[in-house]
Amino acid sequence: MKSLRSLLVWVVLGVLLAGSVLAVAAPTTELPPGLQIPDAARPGPDFNADRATEAYLALLSPEQRAQSDAYFEGGYWLQLWGLLYGLLVAWILLRSGLSRKMRDFGRRVSKRPWLATMVYVAQWVLVGSLLALPLTVYQGYFREHAYGLATQGFGDWTVDQLKGLLISLIIMPPVIGLLYAAVRKTAERWWIWATGGTFLLMLFFMMIAPVFLDPVFNDYKPLRQGEVREEVLSLARANMIPDDNVVEFDASRQTTRISANVSGFLGTTRVALNDNLLERTSKPEILAVLGHEMGHYVLNHGLRLIIYMTLILGCGFWVVHRLFDRALLRWGPRFGLEGRADPAALPLALAILSLFFFFATPLTNSVVRQAEAEADAYGLNAAQEPNGFAMAAMRLSTYRKIKPGALEEIIFYDHPSGYARVHRSMIWLQEHQQSGTGNRE
Image (cartoon, rainbow, N blue to C red; front, side, top):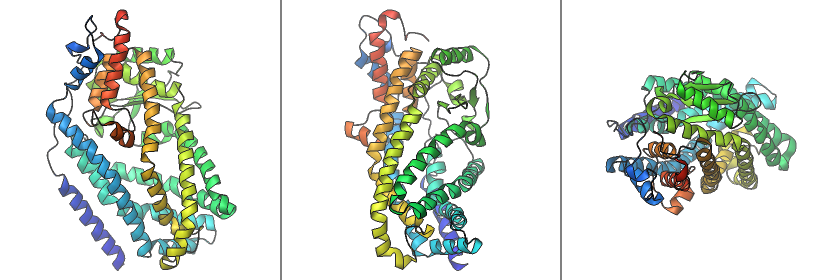
């Protein structure tokens, strides 16, 4: 009980500190509603893609640009602090003996290894979430409000976090239980089986997310009637995308960001637009964003990215396989860990895996960024709204640094930069001036 009280005191103090770090008034970062086409971005005999791009960038005030840079560059540091914080949580679980005690409790509940492992994982999810709470509150609530990107009160935000925790408690115990079953059954080949199992699980969750997971956090309803709906349906049909499940959802209850997605497969495909996109932008922007998202679907990026990420995760499992046994030999007896198949060693395994993914960040970001660039090109050709796409990119640039250095973009960006997106839009417009495309408002 004494250790539990100390843990709770530490968490409460961490939450209070997180709140005091950014207890400031939220700035105004949003661009005005509606499409804004700078004069330099209108087709004409003197049209120049570079000048048009700079004219779009000038839509951001110096204050907005500084705010955007500060928010995005702060995210670079959060990746490091997140890694270190996760390693600290793993150390606390191991050093305090709490992980070992949770394993022993699981064994008292059931003598069957698979069930004892699931009991351990449920405890690990709860305790890990509690230990991570200070960083979660700072990053997910206070920081988002400080930069004007969040709309939820703390109570509603907490409810959403509890929903996420409940989903984790339902999903994580059987998933990690299966992983440990592979470790027990296949010994040295566990990482191969774990990689294959992860691929199947990601396919499964991609299929069920639109039906079972997303509606837990937001209200989805048929897209409102009107001209936008008819053009969205037409765009879907023209790109061979099912148009029987086109919806909108109330993201404004959580965020000021605009977004849309085309998700699901095998009968669960859904085209979804958030209400911020519908209410704060223009029809050319909406169609441009939907063209991009439809590009992901038509180009089969969902499956491609799952394959690529599975291969990267497989490399991560291999690294864990190579280092984990050595780590157990060195620290296992000190922490009461019994071997590779001991669930109490999960924090140690995840610490190694988190280090791998931290250093693999440029690779994972580049894989996703390439897919996003392909979807950009597809969307420009499908929607034929270059100014709409450029304006949407500018709205995203109110919280994404708009013009990074080349190395900075490779390391930290999982999407093309705002500058790159606007410039590509203007290149497209330059090549299609004779058609009159892109001058619609």
